[in-house]
Image (cartoon, rainbow, N blue to C red; front, top):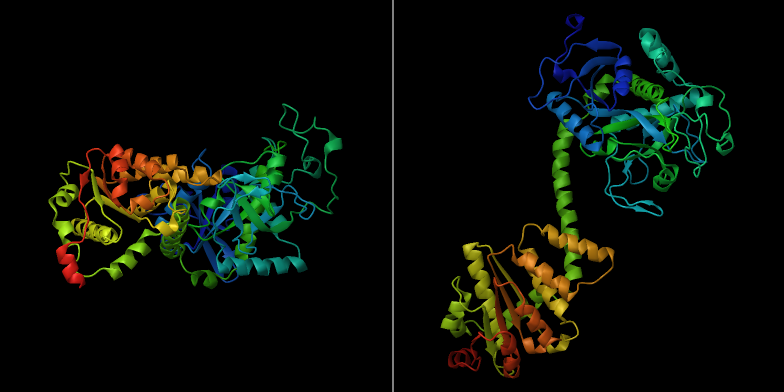
Length: 571
């Protein structure tokens, strides 16, 4: 009875065991050397139901908390939720064991059979688990989509020791399975279908990749034996243990061609581990129940769950209790990991931003602005900032959206532009208002670079830098165009510019030396079609005034010529 079971404080549990399916959990519970009473209390947000107990190690008892995924709710998200809730109630858990079934990936190099056990082992830069279908499938496998963490060091050390032990003597898995069947006879019975026992070599059939299951029956009795892959007979029925990379994702693989396409040096597929590895330090252990092809059925699932659970128990049996106790708590690891992931996410976002900015434009207006600032004499151009037309244009109650300043070569138009830009920047910094600002300095030396796309891209880049995040609509267009290997077009630039301007109440855009633009009329047409919230400041030589007025009839004009005060300051 439950009341007779020993009560153990939640802080004494050091191992978290997670199963997905009911028969995986049953196999886990059958491996406990002693059962404990249910937890006396749980965190308010912990909805898991636990089976508690212990497994004997070399120097004491490992207290184990077992939880399973909600019935019918499987996959990486459910696994992550169960693990997070478990750690909220069992604060001393050091690591997790994700134990259950998986679909094998047999190759010439890996003689994987049904009932064998696959254990996640770091290889190269990978932590033992790779995600599939998180990127896009390619002809050569699947695109990598981020690193998953390796199992904790205490487990890696134990895996190495156990692998060495198995070189000298047989695994105790067969003995553990026999003990399970004696203690729980119902698990060894096949009266109600396949039990937790070996299903026979005759039922372990691997078919050629291009031969699909062609029967309405779940078994392969009607499948062509001539299309079966001939494999060397094993000398006994004991499961082999394989160490390597496990492929994890939310989609069950049941097609041999897809299996081989996505395999990429992996040993098996499963559907939960990717939700855990970067949130819960754990080891993934999978019993092979099928070959991830159309011939898959449920016959081997219970036995495969049992072999995986037996390996997990054998692993814990060789780990010192003190070794686990001295290991850092998983919850502490998660807190630190969140900090690291936050930093890593920021770095990844910054890298992506830089790629987007490079795609938008090759122009760097800020460098040009800095050069002009250094040449400017203090006090020059102040008259411009006090002009009523400028004050009206730059005010929140502006009536006319365009302010044009024309002047001869050398009249100081570029210096005036830099002053206007600085004035707007100071005002925006002081008010912290949701106003955007962007500028471009055209230069006769760079006319080839001053295309419509590059100029609009430069404006867009500066506006995006003012936002906390790049809008999703802009990211979507970028991803689509980059996938098609297309540069920024003027049409795309206008769409993106509208999306960016929508993030601000008002947007100021300053373009100096408009007459040096590569396509004056084309650029004016785009500016004319820009959002009405955009206030435009233009400078150029007098000869373009008529052209500008074709697009902006209601423009404000301030002529730029040598000003008495500026001459005095300069001299």
